[in-house]
Image (tube, rainbow, N blue to C red; front, side):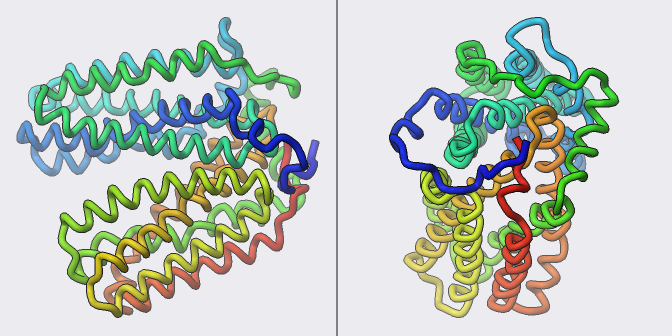
Length: 416
């Protein structure tokens, strides 16, 4: 039943809204989802390069990430069927986590030189299990958190996700300098145990809206229910455009840093390390602020900050290389980007129907990834033709339509 879930938090014990077990569960589940991602991408590519695998094969391995894009195809199964233990959400979560641990260990035990096709197949299985875990965790978070907790819960999930990625990529590559990659993958698999413990200890969200009775109902009804809403197409347009300027700018930042004269060491120290913690802090701050101001106002405010932060790159492009300026722009851009991601993730969760949470959220999150791929494709050409200052100003302007679409949205679009 639609109602306003996007207004500020009513008066009440504020700390109690932050310090509770549901928030810890959101953080731990985010960690479990972020850890496997780069094990099939950058870490696997580093392993194959070290073993002397042909670059063409290494490049083709990026296709193993397709399950993350196509996860909406099997998400209805996780709405329709209920495992015989732990409930609909925790049951599926436990199954996917056990399979994920098993396939990660299997991936580490496969020789990339002797069996390149086998390692590709196992990597796809890892990605499939990981994407399946993402489906269930997104559904669990929507159903477990109260409406006003979605902002903070989403920010903790995102931060946990980033910490998992950092452990897998940074920690995994550091370990690989001292132990074989096979042992690295086994250790990464064992790092999923806290997530399994979290699944076993967490409570199953109440299923007050029922479960689809047939597979057809699980596939068709989520689409029918969504498109029956007033403003359904405006919501889709907003999801496509809200972060499009940010996505386009991000696609060209690395060539930009190098082109204006920063060294790889400076980029690594400021952009990767300092920027990572700015993003984490921004996401956490955004989640806390959303408790006070509500999701709709958060989307406006954080979106405006995101656009302004992109313009900072234009300013940096006309100045001499300065570590101080680079640090300021990166801190502001990553901090506001983290805030915007918290609000955006919370909004997408808020508009799903709890009877079809897994299916609808998987569809919306897949849709969210489209601009990151398509809009980023022509950015190199645009930057080459316009120059860096105009390119980043254009990315700022492109963010405006997404903000204007907020005038077409209102709290009644949300669905519980």
